[in-house]
Image (cartoon, rainbow, N blue to C red; front, side):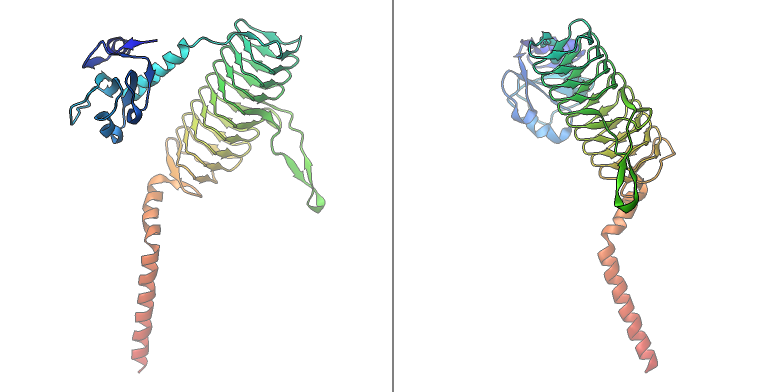
Length: 348
């Protein structure tokens, strides 16, 4: 479907610099722009590509001033990054949604499905499942017994949701996600043996949560592992049993959160972060990538880094010193030699 630069500007409440009638029917990266496509410039690191891109229309921030002439039409908006996000969302919404239940899907006779539900090939819907309106379950997904899935949630290919889990409205679970697997609960016995502790709780995922590919969210030993409303998890994240992640927290890839930890609302956690179990992390905490959190963070809206992690500003100052350690060590050795030589001369 084609749109003119003028139509795009009208939708985004922006203004046009150039040909308002030029049309686009696809999107592209600014460095790989093609005629007939729309792209955007929000990070000035990519400004150089604006002068060479072949894209027909480029979204830019209102205050942006080109340093050279441009050969494309500019649409000026308040925030180019948010604008492209809004257009991409609109594009996705315009795609026809799949509908119906595939003949080779298995749906237990006791399961209840809402209106406009799609269940793809070889998906399994077990006993007692309740599926809301507009839910999309892609091929080869498995929905265990007594699972509840809220309206307009999307379950991608190969997702496994164990029994008694609760998934909220308008969530997205990407391929390979496992919800409700057993928590890592083993009691040490004599002779270096371990006895498995039954994990009898469940997982509760609230509304508007997105979970990236191949994440694992373990069921609680007792009670619930809880992912609060608006949480966004990147790919390859491990959430252990009885963890609670607060509202609108975002976590980047390869992070691991050990059991019974409570993460507050509005936190931002970088990639490859490790969090020890039974901790509390305050609302608004920011944890830099590859940090190791070994103690509770009590003060709200703080930033930490390092392993073990501590305040970001202190970490940065400490790192400056750390990088100078070889020179400091050399100076200390030289001072020690000079002192030893001075002592030797005094004895003479």
